[in-house]
Amino acid sequence: MESQQTRTSAIIEAIRQRIAARTLVPGDRLPSIRQFAKTMQASPSTIVQAYDRLVAEGVIAPRLGSGFYVTGRTLPPLLLAEATTPTARAVDPFWVSRQSLDSDPTTLKPGCGWLPTEWMPNDALRKALRAVARGENIILSEYGSTRGAVRLRRLLTAQFAEGGLDVSPDQVLLTGSGTQAVDLICRLLVRRGDTVLVDDPCYFNFQALLRAHEIRIVGVPYTATGPDTEAFEQIVLQEKPRLYITNSALHNPTGATLSPQTAFRLLSTAAASGVLIVEDDIFADFETAPSPRLAVMDGLEHVIRIGSFSKTLSASVRCGYIAARKDLIEGLIDLQVATSFGGPSPVTTEVIADVLEGGSYRKHMQEIQRRLEKSRKTVIHKLEALGILAWTVPKGGFYLWCRLPDGQNSTDIALRSLADKIIHAPGNVFSVSQSASPFMRFNVTQCEDDKVFRSLERMLAQGGSTNPL
Image 1 (cartoon, rainbow, N blue to C red):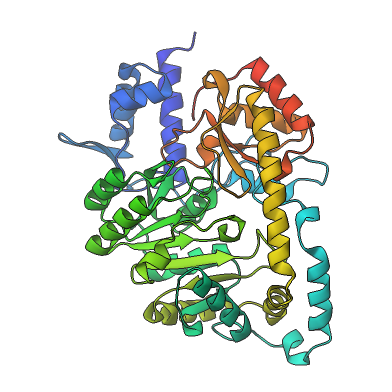
Image 2: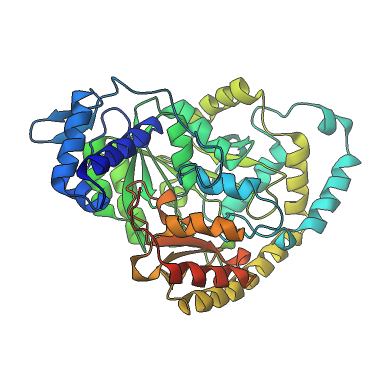
């Protein structure tokens, strides 16, 4: 049996790793002794020993009647990654991205965040590329304008108008990607040590990007109708965050849809507190019927809309956008000039504009929605046969957020599945509080090979650890 001293050292190392990776930053409060003992499956006395040793080293400090807080006096250089092998490195917000992006073509990727190649409008993209190649030389050789191509911005504002959001092209900034859109917003509006709210669970790259900016991340519990509004109001009052970043349509990873009541309370709290909401609308076109949008209800007063075309058109021809108040757009333009010298490639924006204008895009998305509905039903049925149950049945999109049976740990299963050349997305990479170890996100379009389910059945039969760290 593991000695208390060894267990104490393991807990100290786990806390050090969180601080090094900026999951915990100066000023963050550590879990209470009782709460952390339960999480780590350790005795309270072991947690007391670990905290006392970290206090002695100056890593954390007690506050009378409040708990223990990270000091920052011994903060190491920002640690985003150390390990060099998939099984050695931490299963953190970078893990799924690195495994999926670096895998060979024979690897199955039910944990990845994109559609299979054969689902994409490749013929329409080829046609658009040929048209651009025959076009003006300036498109092939010059920098993009600071706001990005006006043609694509006008197409976007027309799409927005269909959904009830009336903006001018001058309120839209094209970016190199959706991720760059979030990066620019963070550069403009937050500083190191500021607090930003995200959903718990949320898209893991929101956490990865915020960590790279050394921003304090606080999670808001997520429900089947959106963030827990009571918790949101309390956290805003206590933490005074600068931003809240969320998906409102087909939430990633849960697939849930925001309700009108939740949207109204979120906007009321944001308006009263001065919090800006960044609404990632990347999955909008996967909806068969439109759901509430914060940007539409707010009119971009307290909301910034972002999005991209990587999920619907191509992850190779990358372009994102930001729709916001004009004063914010002006500041974002300067930042994009400073970091990228202009907007996205004119070749990219012209290709995307050609596809959107060509008449095939709507038919493409209608076919995608039809195929997704069929795949979703099939995958839900196959997972249920293994005792893996969907947390909610999404109204569109390609994600399922599922609970594993018998309290099994999804991180353990994801690590062991690498031997089968299968990449899963375990729950805790999405969770700020590390409370989603029994959950896993599945991409239904990447689950067509029955090897995925045979491997899962074997992993579940073998069982696994329940230690979330």
